[in-house]
Length: 272
Image 1 (tube, rainbow, N blue to C red):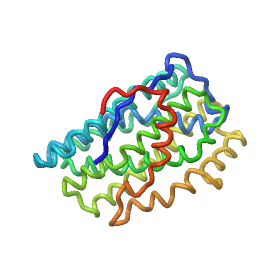
Image 2 (image 1 turned 180 degrees about the horizontal axis):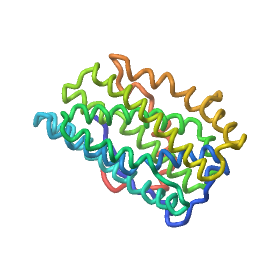
Image 3 (image 1 turned 90 degrees about the vertical axis):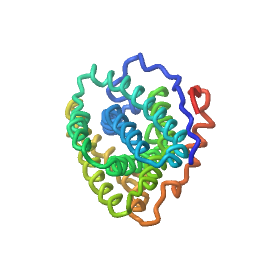
Image 4 (image 1 turned 135 degrees about the vertical axis):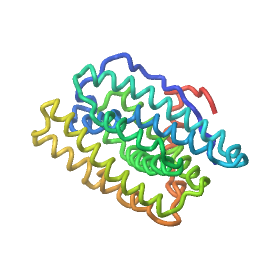
Protein backbone atom coordinates (compact mmCIF):
# COMPACT_ATOMS: atom_id res chain seq x y z
CA UNK A 1 0.00 0.00 0.00
CA UNK A 2 1.06 3.58 -0.67
CA UNK A 3 0.61 6.67 1.49
CA UNK A 4 -0.77 9.20 -1.02
CA UNK A 5 -0.69 12.92 -0.28
CA UNK A 6 -3.26 15.29 -1.75
CA UNK A 7 -1.57 18.57 -2.70
CA UNK A 8 -2.85 22.00 -3.67
CA UNK A 9 -0.73 23.44 -6.47
CA UNK A 10 0.32 27.04 -5.81
CA UNK A 11 0.48 28.49 -9.30
CA UNK A 12 -1.45 31.16 -11.17
CA UNK A 13 -3.86 29.65 -13.70
CA UNK A 14 -5.94 32.79 -14.11
CA UNK A 15 -3.47 34.40 -16.51
CA UNK A 16 -3.87 33.41 -20.16
CA UNK A 17 -1.73 30.83 -21.93
CA UNK A 18 0.23 31.62 -25.15
CA UNK A 19 -0.27 29.30 -28.12
CA UNK A 20 3.28 27.97 -28.11
CA UNK A 21 3.80 28.00 -24.37
CA UNK A 22 6.40 25.18 -24.48
CA UNK A 23 9.39 27.38 -25.25
CA UNK A 24 7.92 28.34 -28.63
CA UNK A 25 7.85 24.71 -29.80
CA UNK A 26 4.65 24.17 -31.78
CA UNK A 27 4.73 20.36 -31.66
CA UNK A 28 5.45 19.99 -27.94
CA UNK A 29 2.79 22.58 -27.11
CA UNK A 30 0.24 20.81 -29.31
CA UNK A 31 1.08 17.37 -27.87
CA UNK A 32 0.83 18.44 -24.24
CA UNK A 33 -2.32 20.43 -24.97
CA UNK A 34 -3.83 17.27 -26.46
CA UNK A 35 -2.99 15.26 -23.35
CA UNK A 36 -4.50 17.92 -21.12
CA UNK A 37 -7.72 17.88 -23.13
CA UNK A 38 -8.29 14.25 -22.13
CA UNK A 39 -7.65 14.71 -18.43
CA UNK A 40 -10.82 16.15 -16.86
CA UNK A 41 -13.20 13.51 -18.20
CA UNK A 42 -10.52 10.81 -18.08
CA UNK A 43 -9.65 11.49 -14.45
CA UNK A 44 -13.34 11.31 -13.55
CA UNK A 45 -13.54 7.90 -15.22
CA UNK A 46 -10.59 6.71 -13.09
CA UNK A 47 -12.23 8.01 -9.92
CA UNK A 48 -15.55 6.35 -10.70
CA UNK A 49 -13.90 3.07 -11.67
CA UNK A 50 -12.01 2.73 -8.39
CA UNK A 51 -15.06 3.67 -6.36
CA UNK A 52 -17.00 0.92 -8.14
CA UNK A 53 -14.15 -1.54 -7.72
CA UNK A 54 -13.71 -0.94 -4.00
CA UNK A 55 -17.43 -1.54 -3.42
CA UNK A 56 -17.00 -5.09 -4.75
CA UNK A 57 -14.10 -5.94 -2.44
CA UNK A 58 -14.62 -8.03 0.70
CA UNK A 59 -14.82 -5.89 3.84
CA UNK A 60 -11.28 -6.65 5.01
CA UNK A 61 -9.83 -5.73 1.60
CA UNK A 62 -11.98 -2.64 1.43
CA UNK A 63 -10.55 -1.45 4.72
CA UNK A 64 -7.03 -2.32 3.64
CA UNK A 65 -7.17 -0.11 0.54
CA UNK A 66 -9.55 2.60 1.80
CA UNK A 67 -6.91 5.22 2.65
CA UNK A 68 -4.88 4.66 -0.52
CA UNK A 69 -7.95 4.82 -2.77
CA UNK A 70 -9.09 7.99 -1.01
CA UNK A 71 -5.67 9.52 -1.66
CA UNK A 72 -5.81 8.41 -5.30
CA UNK A 73 -9.24 10.01 -5.71
CA UNK A 74 -8.01 13.22 -4.06
CA UNK A 75 -5.00 13.47 -6.36
CA UNK A 76 -7.02 12.71 -9.50
CA UNK A 77 -9.74 15.18 -8.54
CA UNK A 78 -7.06 17.86 -8.13
CA UNK A 79 -5.58 16.99 -11.54
CA UNK A 80 -9.05 17.20 -13.07
CA UNK A 81 -9.61 20.67 -11.62
CA UNK A 82 -6.20 22.05 -12.58
CA UNK A 83 -6.40 20.81 -16.16
CA UNK A 84 -9.96 22.06 -16.51
CA UNK A 85 -8.59 25.53 -15.73
CA UNK A 86 -5.76 25.08 -18.22
CA UNK A 87 -8.15 23.75 -20.86
CA UNK A 88 -10.34 26.79 -20.37
CA UNK A 89 -7.48 28.89 -21.75
CA UNK A 90 -7.19 26.51 -24.72
CA UNK A 91 -10.91 26.94 -25.37
CA UNK A 92 -10.47 30.69 -25.44
CA UNK A 93 -7.67 30.26 -27.97
CA UNK A 94 -10.12 28.45 -30.26
CA UNK A 95 -8.94 24.85 -29.90
CA UNK A 96 -11.60 22.18 -30.44
CA UNK A 97 -11.43 19.31 -27.96
CA UNK A 98 -12.69 16.23 -29.81
CA UNK A 99 -10.84 13.73 -27.60
CA UNK A 100 -12.94 14.54 -24.57
CA UNK A 101 -16.12 13.96 -26.58
CA UNK A 102 -14.90 10.54 -27.71
CA UNK A 103 -14.15 9.50 -24.11
CA UNK A 104 -17.59 10.71 -23.04
CA UNK A 105 -19.24 8.58 -25.74
CA UNK A 106 -17.30 5.46 -24.71
CA UNK A 107 -17.80 5.75 -20.97
CA UNK A 108 -21.47 4.61 -20.87
CA UNK A 109 -20.44 1.34 -22.54
CA UNK A 110 -18.95 0.28 -19.19
CA UNK A 111 -22.11 0.88 -17.15
CA UNK A 112 -23.29 -2.73 -17.42
CA UNK A 113 -19.97 -4.61 -17.17
CA UNK A 114 -18.24 -6.09 -14.15
CA UNK A 115 -16.17 -3.54 -12.22
CA UNK A 116 -13.03 -5.60 -12.86
CA UNK A 117 -13.12 -4.59 -16.53
CA UNK A 118 -13.50 -0.91 -15.71
CA UNK A 119 -10.65 -1.06 -13.21
CA UNK A 120 -8.53 -2.95 -15.79
CA UNK A 121 -8.99 -0.05 -18.23
CA UNK A 122 -7.97 2.40 -15.52
CA UNK A 123 -4.91 0.31 -14.58
CA UNK A 124 -3.83 0.15 -18.23
CA UNK A 125 -4.25 3.89 -18.75
CA UNK A 126 -2.48 4.62 -15.48
CA UNK A 127 0.50 2.63 -16.79
CA UNK A 128 0.59 4.91 -19.83
CA UNK A 129 0.51 8.02 -17.67
CA UNK A 130 3.14 6.60 -15.31
CA UNK A 131 5.67 5.81 -18.04
CA UNK A 132 4.97 9.17 -19.68
CA UNK A 133 5.53 10.80 -16.28
CA UNK A 134 8.85 9.04 -15.73
CA UNK A 135 10.01 10.07 -19.19
CA UNK A 136 9.02 13.67 -18.54
CA UNK A 137 10.74 13.77 -15.15
CA UNK A 138 13.87 12.19 -16.61
CA UNK A 139 13.98 14.45 -19.66
CA UNK A 140 12.81 17.82 -18.41
CA UNK A 141 14.54 19.44 -21.37
CA UNK A 142 11.33 18.75 -23.31
CA UNK A 143 9.86 21.65 -21.32
CA UNK A 144 12.94 23.86 -21.62
CA UNK A 145 11.87 27.45 -22.09
CA UNK A 146 8.28 26.72 -21.07
CA UNK A 147 6.45 29.17 -18.85
CA UNK A 148 7.60 28.36 -15.30
CA UNK A 149 4.06 27.99 -13.94
CA UNK A 150 3.12 25.54 -16.73
CA UNK A 151 6.38 23.63 -16.40
CA UNK A 152 5.60 23.26 -12.70
CA UNK A 153 2.05 22.12 -13.49
CA UNK A 154 3.22 19.32 -15.76
CA UNK A 155 6.05 18.10 -13.53
CA UNK A 156 3.80 18.14 -10.44
CA UNK A 157 1.19 16.11 -12.34
CA UNK A 158 3.86 13.71 -13.58
CA UNK A 159 5.22 13.22 -10.06
CA UNK A 160 1.81 12.34 -8.66
CA UNK A 161 1.04 9.98 -11.54
CA UNK A 162 4.25 8.12 -10.73
CA UNK A 163 3.38 8.19 -7.04
CA UNK A 164 -0.02 6.48 -7.42
CA UNK A 165 0.89 4.27 -10.38
CA UNK A 166 0.08 1.00 -8.61
CA UNK A 167 -3.28 1.82 -6.99
CA UNK A 168 -5.63 0.78 -9.81
CA UNK A 169 -3.45 -2.24 -10.59
CA UNK A 170 -3.64 -3.45 -6.98
CA UNK A 171 -7.41 -3.02 -6.85
CA UNK A 172 -7.72 -5.03 -10.06
CA UNK A 173 -5.64 -7.81 -8.52
CA UNK A 174 -7.65 -7.68 -5.29
CA UNK A 175 -10.85 -8.08 -7.33
CA UNK A 176 -9.48 -11.32 -8.75
CA UNK A 177 -8.68 -9.86 -12.15
CA UNK A 178 -6.58 -12.20 -14.26
CA UNK A 179 -3.55 -11.67 -16.47
CA UNK A 180 -5.37 -12.50 -19.71
CA UNK A 181 -7.96 -9.75 -19.38
CA UNK A 182 -5.40 -7.30 -18.03
CA UNK A 183 -3.37 -7.68 -21.23
CA UNK A 184 -6.47 -7.62 -23.47
CA UNK A 185 -7.56 -4.31 -22.06
CA UNK A 186 -4.02 -2.94 -22.22
CA UNK A 187 -3.85 -3.66 -25.95
CA UNK A 188 -7.20 -1.98 -26.53
CA UNK A 189 -6.23 1.02 -24.42
CA UNK A 190 -2.93 1.26 -26.34
CA UNK A 191 -4.75 1.45 -29.68
CA UNK A 192 -7.26 4.01 -28.47
CA UNK A 193 -4.75 6.13 -26.56
CA UNK A 194 -2.25 6.40 -29.41
CA UNK A 195 -4.97 7.07 -31.98
CA UNK A 196 -6.66 9.70 -29.84
CA UNK A 197 -3.51 11.59 -28.89
CA UNK A 198 -2.36 11.63 -32.51
CA UNK A 199 -5.72 12.90 -33.77
CA UNK A 200 -5.95 15.66 -31.18
CA UNK A 201 -2.33 16.75 -31.64
CA UNK A 202 -2.80 17.00 -35.41
CA UNK A 203 -6.02 18.96 -34.91
CA UNK A 204 -4.23 21.37 -32.57
CA UNK A 205 -1.41 21.88 -35.07
CA UNK A 206 -3.90 22.45 -37.88
CA UNK A 207 -5.64 25.10 -35.79
CA UNK A 208 -2.31 26.88 -35.23
CA UNK A 209 -1.29 26.69 -38.87
CA UNK A 210 1.79 24.67 -37.92
CA UNK A 211 0.84 21.24 -39.27
CA UNK A 212 2.86 21.46 -42.47
CA UNK A 213 5.88 23.35 -41.20
CA UNK A 214 9.22 21.55 -41.41
CA UNK A 215 10.14 22.78 -37.93
CA UNK A 216 7.04 21.09 -36.51
CA UNK A 217 7.93 17.66 -37.87
CA UNK A 218 11.60 18.05 -36.98
CA UNK A 219 10.50 18.65 -33.40
CA UNK A 220 8.11 15.68 -33.59
CA UNK A 221 10.88 13.38 -34.79
CA UNK A 222 13.23 14.55 -32.04
CA UNK A 223 10.62 14.48 -29.27
CA UNK A 224 9.21 11.06 -30.16
CA UNK A 225 12.08 9.14 -31.79
CA UNK A 226 15.31 10.94 -30.89
CA UNK A 227 17.95 9.49 -28.60
CA UNK A 228 15.89 10.53 -25.57
CA UNK A 229 12.56 10.49 -27.40
CA UNK A 230 9.26 9.51 -25.82
CA UNK A 231 8.57 6.44 -27.96
CA UNK A 232 12.15 5.24 -27.84
CA UNK A 233 12.47 5.54 -24.06
CA UNK A 234 9.03 4.21 -23.07
CA UNK A 235 8.86 1.16 -25.36
CA UNK A 236 10.45 -1.26 -22.88
CA UNK A 237 8.34 -0.05 -19.91
CA UNK A 238 5.28 -0.33 -22.17
CA UNK A 239 6.14 -3.93 -23.05
CA UNK A 240 6.70 -4.81 -19.41
CA UNK A 241 3.00 -4.46 -18.63
CA UNK A 242 2.24 -7.65 -20.58
CA UNK A 243 4.53 -9.82 -18.47
CA UNK A 244 2.76 -12.22 -16.11
CA UNK A 245 4.88 -11.10 -13.13
CA UNK A 246 4.59 -7.36 -13.82
CA UNK A 247 3.81 -4.90 -11.06
CA UNK A 248 3.95 -1.08 -11.36
CA UNK A 249 6.23 -0.88 -8.33
CA UNK A 250 8.97 -2.43 -10.46
CA UNK A 251 9.22 1.03 -12.03
CA UNK A 252 11.54 3.25 -9.99
CA UNK A 253 9.89 6.39 -8.61
CA UNK A 254 13.05 8.15 -7.41
CA UNK A 255 12.58 11.02 -9.88
CA UNK A 256 9.06 11.63 -8.62
CA UNK A 257 10.14 11.65 -4.98
CA UNK A 258 13.07 13.94 -5.76
CA UNK A 259 10.90 16.45 -7.62
CA UNK A 260 8.25 16.57 -4.90
CA UNK A 261 10.91 17.01 -2.22
CA UNK A 262 12.80 19.71 -4.14
CA UNK A 263 9.69 21.66 -5.11
CA UNK A 264 7.71 21.54 -1.87
CA UNK A 265 7.29 25.33 -2.00
CA UNK A 266 5.16 24.92 -5.14
CA UNK A 267 2.28 23.23 -3.33
CA UNK A 268 0.62 22.77 0.04
CA UNK A 269 -0.54 19.47 1.49
CA UNK A 270 -4.30 19.33 2.06
CA UNK A 271 -4.73 15.67 2.97
CA UNK A 272 -2.98 12.37 3.48
